Length: 350
Ligand SMILES: C[S@@+](CC[C@H](N)C(=O)[O-])C[C@H]1O[C@@H](n2cnc3c(N)ncnc32)[C@H](O)[C@@H]1O
Ligand SMILES: [Zn+2]
Image 1: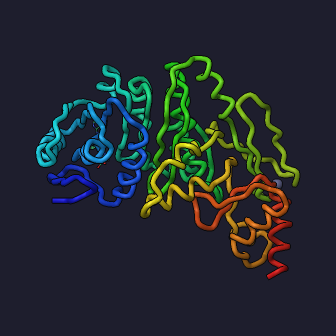
Image 2: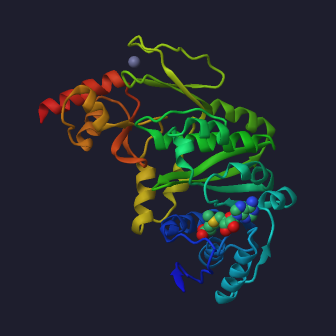
Image 3: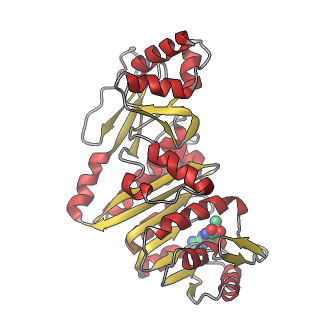
């Protein structure tokens, strides 16, 4: 018997339960409390822990569970009884179920890639979509061919690879939901250990679903000097970096906001999940980020404290912040030449 949040969960053999995803579910419950879903599908439910916690902790009504494993469905039934929750359980292929039924809120929490479920989830959900991906190497550029196969986008590994991964995942979701005249807004997203998690709000509008493409496009990245730029899908990129090297082009990716500041500001600041929300809230919007060791390696100097670099950038009028993706990285609007100059100055002062 496992206690997680307000739920008590029994895990049958061969039914999936990952205690390391508890942090993710804890964060979800806080987020769900701000979402007010009117009907929720835990589409890949396994033990049912997420949907049960959503019922008990976020007051979700009309929660339904699905898993194509018979054993998992029996396990969910047992766990519902243990927690005094009544709900419908489907024993179906999730994609087939989502083609047939609509929900206010659909949650896709697969083992591996969500890509095979995104079309049907985009059709089914009419207000909220919550998506997990654990195939981070396909998304972040570690396995470019997997990225192309699963997400129809190209990337290579860079110092901001987890941000690329989250942007590739959201970019794919955008292309799926806009087919159904739904316009997405990112409420919150993060990368942790070996998974990415994104929560989106959808509005039905064909005009909005077209206009949202202004926030998708490509990152041009120079592998020689670290310079990068983003161009939206309507622009024609300049392929050569100022250093003379031909840039690499990654995408199509989501280039828009990775969270809604107003939404995140309402989330509770308690505990470990509170720290994540705080870090997310303090992050400025810019399309990539810089890793201080990577820059200092190129400059052949030891890295000065990150907080000093961020302060120095701000003093010179550039927006700058830490980032949710890495403890040794920062975001800023300054370009790589300005950043290098500022880091060199900070280094000299030390
Ligand atoms: C990673 S587990 C879900 C974990 C669960 N959401 C949690 O928070 O503990 C993925 C589940 O999806 C189920 N599954 C995989 N493919 C499916 C499909 N096409 N349709 C329905 N269920 C599927 C598996 O049986 C497994 O129980
Ligand atoms: Zn260059």
